[in-house]
Length: 164
Image (cartoon, rainbow, N blue to C red; front, side, top):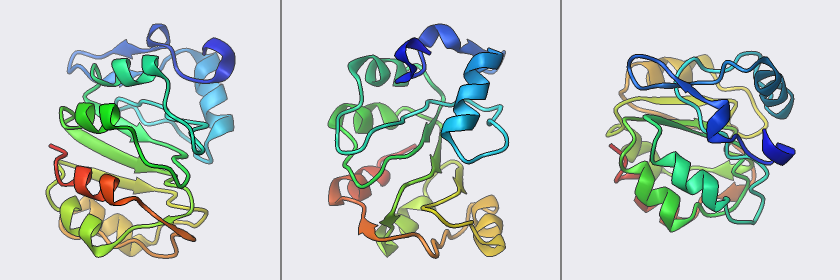
């Protein structure tokens, strides 16, 4: 991981279904340190970290268009850039991870029904309830509980409706 700030396209392999896989042990170890997860998804993953209130790097925005799935990690309380929102429309699946301390409104819950697949893990600083895991698995209704302290921007809520 160049500079430790993002995953370089060179760190990523693709399986026969076009999904991105991170197989470099050093990168996997670093991701495990950065995230609170015990495992790294075998599906495509794009690590958006250290976003804070800053923009995602141009390199990440460009490489995002090449992924079948996106993992949004540690987004904090900031809006996702227009470029990332546009590229997200091309993804088959969206995995929202560690959304920071943001509460998600009914509008986002409704739009979640339109996702091809939504997997919500470690939302905020709380564990996701079994009920949430079950509803997310069923692709029916997603309810976020104990999420944290701030709001997801209107722009992100609107863009969620446009995800494939």
